[in-house]
Image 1: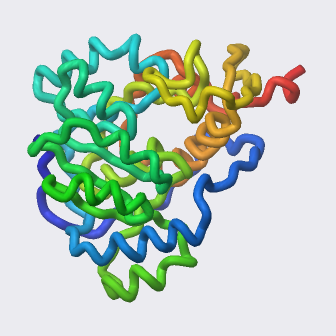
Image 2: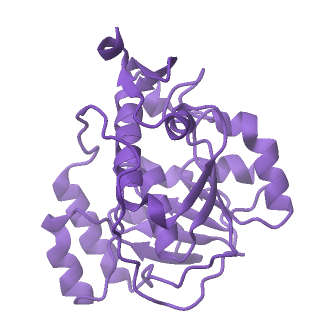
Amino acid sequence: MLQTQTRTHPPTVDVKPKLQPVPEIFCSINQAPETIRSNIEKNIQLGLPQVVPYETQEDKVIALALGGATLDTTFDDLKNKHDNGMPVVTVNGTYKYCMDRGIRPSAFIMLDSREFNHRFIHKTHQDCKYLICSQCDPYVFEKLKDNQVWIWHCAGQEDNEDLLKGQYNDDFYPVMGGSTVALRAIHLLRLLGFNKFEVYGFDSCVIGHHHAYEQKENDEEDVIDVIVADKEFKCTAANYHQAKEFVQMIIGTGEHYNLAIHGDGLISHIIKNPDSLRKKEEVN
C-alpha cells in the first residue's frame, strides 16, 4: 500500500548544477489551451481531495514504471520487487501493462489532457490511488468516480491560476516538472513525501519500439540521432526534449531525491555520462 504520513510544506530548493544544459529543441503542447482551461474549470468543481505535501519518508522506496521499451527487459526485476512488497506506481499505458502481468499498482498518475487517454484506465481496483491532473479530460474522472481519486495541478500554467485561486484560494500545490508525465510524476511523488525511486522504462529513446506496449499515436513520429559518450540513440523530438528537461530538472531539484534508473536507455547513459548529450550533427 502507498501510505503518506505528516503533512508539511515542500523543501526549499537550492542546489548547485550537476549536469550542463543541452541544446534546445522546440515542442508544443498537444492540446488547445482553451480545452485545457475548460477541463480544469470542470474538474476542480468535483470536490475531489487534492494532492498535498507530506513529510519525507526516508525509509520508503517506490518503483516507478514508465513506458519505454526497456520495461520489457527489466520487468522480471520489477515484478520480483513488487512481490516482495515494494509499491509500484504506474503512468498511462504502464498501468494496464503491469495489471496484465500480475502487478497491482499502488498508484496511477495521469497528466495528458487529450480525450483518448481515458483508455489507459483499465480494470480499476479499490486499493489503487488514482492521481489525476486537473487538466485531464473530464471523462477520466467520470470513469474513476467509484475509486480513490486525488486531483493535482501543473505548475507553469499562469493563464489558469485564476481558476485554482477561485476554487481553492491559496490552498493548492502546483506540481513542477517538465512536459511529460515521467518528469511530473517524480515531483508529484516527492511532494507526497517519497524521495527514493527505482525507475523502470525511463528510456527517452527508441529501442526497437517507442513503448513497451502498443501506442499507435507515436508510430509515425520522425526520429533524430543523438550521442551520449560515443553511444548513439534514436529519439523522437519528444524523447530528446524530455532528455533535455530531465537534465534541467536534475540541476534544479536533483538534490532532493534519489533515482535508480533501470535499463539501457538514453536517460541512464546521461546519468552515467553527464554533459554528454548531443545531436549527432553537432558531434560530426
